[in-house]
Image 1 (cartoon, rainbow, N blue to C red):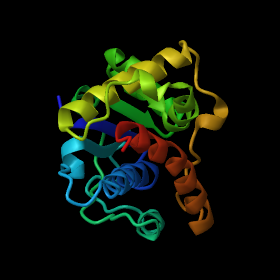
Image 2 (cartoon, one colour):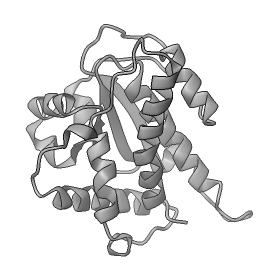
Image 3 (tube, rainbow, N blue to C red):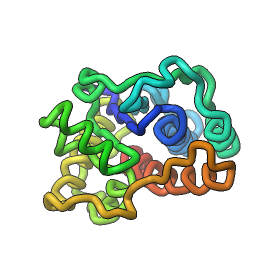
Length: 206
């Protein structure tokens, strides 16, 4: 039940998945900023819960990697309060959509929870398939937790149907930017935004 919950997964949970987590939060807040003055709108976290985890627990409790945090700040987001954690089965169970950095991590998620396969995608795969979805076929986009949740669940079902059981493409993977400098982090953050910004637009079509 609400909020619509998105789980981002990478390897160590200090670079790619934290950026995706916080950049989706930013994209949702930017959609809500478009609500006309005086109109009632829930807080972003009442509509969409964006969180993340890593397939390994090497960095448990650590902050976001500094160049990843710089990318989030530079784009208007907030990395404060982030703490890395290892992916657990209950994180997957509670998620309405799981977005992984790579196909290997998608396989890892599905190995933990086979029933999550229809709602687990490589992030680039999900972004590539989003344009196939007809927004008019989704439930009405009212600004209520229940409506955004229903719209999100229907969107995931539509994207799953659009992939027709096909495997992700090699280009859907996000490169691991760890240790590779700000230019690589910036490119990876751009690629993340290519998915999370359209996702937020479809969830909150105001």
